[in-house]
View 1 (cartoon, rainbow, N blue to C red):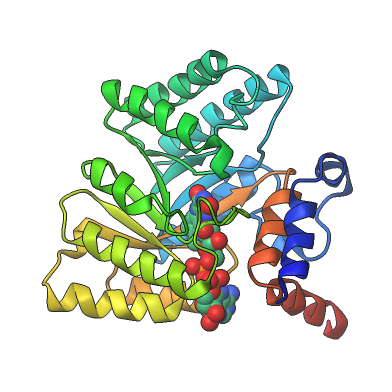
View 2 (cartoon, rainbow, N blue to C red; view 1 turned 60 degrees about the vertical axis):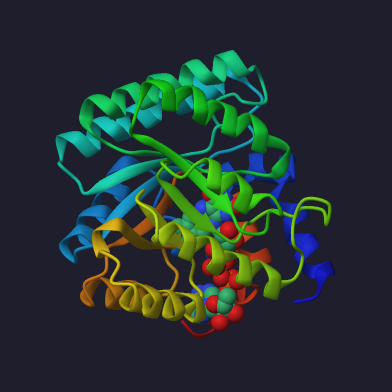
Length: 303
Ligand code: FDA
């Protein structure tokens, strides 16, 4: 895909008007293939089905870049209801949160209080909370929130984006933190991020291997079979325990491969977004891989 097309979809993903209005439209453009419905009932059903196949889940209550404190409080309450549900139904599932949904852009103390309430509730239920990494302008603040929480709670971790030039140095400082390795989903400048696929992939593999040789739990989050195969070989070669890492993919992507990896005996976790705020998330998926729209368009033509 040309950079122009990619930039177009990144631009759409951040468009406030479209993000707001898409909540009222219901799912369009095939988004329902990548979003597990709009409510707790639909997402619970999806998790139960995955759990039946030996796959765990991480739930993302869709929403980000919130600028209204009432909306952030509402999101916090919804997320606590998700934790209650995971606990009540004994689901094999943890939580992924975006802290801009919980007020990071409004006031850092307000956001911190919301995140703390979530992590405290999850701690009581013995549920892990992953703080997703958003765009680079929120990177330092996200790491600050993580460090404060890590002082009080063991059940919290975050994400390292392999496109960041500083990723390796930061990972070295966070060796004891549970970490998800990803390529990175936002458009960043050459001053902070690698721009070419080759460099990003090379760094991903380097970071993942380093983590696999360490002690803390690592989630290898990619749909890239080249990377997955290389890391599977590395794990065999170094006799690394399968309890020390998992593969992760997004809901709706490469389903067969997700089930196959679980059948091969690897820990596998599916990232499951749900809710009405689907637009930004879905536009980023199209920016990464335009076929994600093409597959759906084809389906719509032939069904
Ligand atoms: P990429 O899109 O680079 O594809 C590489 C190759 O894999 C393709 O050329 C193709 O051969 C194959 N492939 C990929 N998708 C395929 C498909 N659907 N069907 C067939 N072949 C396919 N980002 C972020 O910035 N912060 C975060 O917190 C997270 N969190 C997160 C969680 C999870 C579970 C995942 C999987 C991803 C994220 N991301 C993320 C997104 C991540 O940074 C990245 O943008 C996407 O995963 C896309 O990169 P991939 O590594 O999947 O492969």
